[in-house]
Amino acid sequence: MKILTSDEVRHAEQEAVETQELSTLLLMQRAGFSVAQFCLLNFKFDSVCVICGKGNNGGDGFVAASGLLEMGKQVNVVVLARGPDDLSTDAAHWCERLSVKPLWVSKESDFNSKAVQQALAADLMIDAIFGIGFKPPLKGVAKRAVQIMNEFEGEIVCVDVPSGVDADSLEPSSEDEEEAAVIGDGIITFIAPKPAHVFGNLTSGPVAVAELGVEA
Image (cartoon, rainbow, N blue to C red; front, side, top):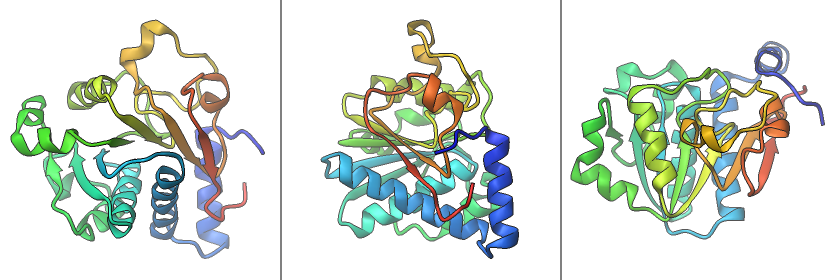
């Protein structure tokens, strides 16, 4: 299997949309259901908290949340945004279709609300904050969210790459960088592995690639 950079993955996605009649919404749906399937195959849990960003990584998280709800899991969704208008177009599409009410977190103090605290007391967390478009460092509410996940006593599944990681990095993570990115117990990425998956020592748990029907 090829190792692709972020730009190469975006190019493959665009080629698929243009030549294979695959919409970006369909690709996001496939990615999200792959996340749900990965969680069910590799981890034991009854409750899950999906922490979503504003972009397409968050959109994958919304679809994963819907899939896990259909499987009978107790699901809460925390979104690092002020509301739906902050989301990317595709992410907003899938957010609107959630059958649970998202919890919006736009400032660090919002994490202290009773509803968010209850959501964070789950068996499993899904990190769907940042994907391959992210470049360090983490800032603001996203940085606090990563700190919360790294303090979490349950297991964490990272969508595409752990939030805080540069997908194109060729350098292994060090102990000094532990607070700069999510330390996950499993990772599911899409289309192809990126350099950080191979060289970054990102997790000691399972790593899977969902090709999404895209030729890379």
